[in-house]
Length: 414
Image (cartoon, rainbow, N blue to C red; front, side, top):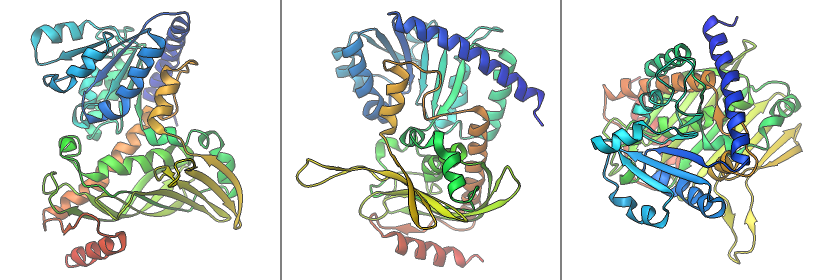
């Protein structure tokens, strides 16, 4: 049964879409696009800025406002290269005053997830029916705290702003070709998902520059990708974790209770009331190369989502595409491409054909479900850390060896 609260959010969403579509028409007519980027860390430098810089060069009709709470010493070159970019240090009163008067079209929230909801609240408008931003996209997850996220949802409903507000997961933009056909593909494998297997593993260690952003560990950073994809393409919702076995790699820059690897087993319920089983791993410093996939199994087949980085052969002339493949009774029935998530998301949002909701955006309801599942898994890690320190492994340890280490280490508590 739909609650009054849900109905209020749904009505606001429709109103915000109308407002955003009107603004999209103005962009097409030649109006300047105003973009605020909250958080000028390495994700902005590596993923967002190359695209935004190219957009400024090719279109010219864009102003970028980058904000942070530190001096812009690392961004001198960026600022010199483009007169369309301004940097505001929010700890400097005069700059914060200018920042507070901005009226952007789009806000990209890249700050640490502990302050996601606080940052977004600044942009939804202080007065009823007034929105200071047309659309807000929050780099996953919605927030680190379910309580903060729930408080924001109620605040959002009470303000009735003309603002679209979504969390964004670039892994969803990777599977944009598959998402509209997901139901059809799940019908091919038996009508529902009965098991999930996944791995989201990176071979590099945790970067010192990301220590603050990854302070809670890899569950918050990587598990949310799997949850985002499964929440959008299946009717699976609440996870019940049976086992969470964490570890940390030697020399990790993260706090002692922040895992860099986790072996997970869980049950997950769908909207029909049936239960699927699941198992997966997330982590950094594992193996010799990245290993990323999601496998959705049904009674009559499976869907294999290959999320590994695109490889290039030695001649440099051929790329090995990542694919999503659908198998029914052992025979391949469907095949879809896996795209560059950030490029696809930003290209749709700021490209030639503007749309209301780019691929990769999640609604309030799906975002809240992900936050609660992440908190449940992380809560189990905290509970274990109260009894023993996390076991350590060498960077490059194989997955099989690492899983064996975790099982032997944590079995002593059973």
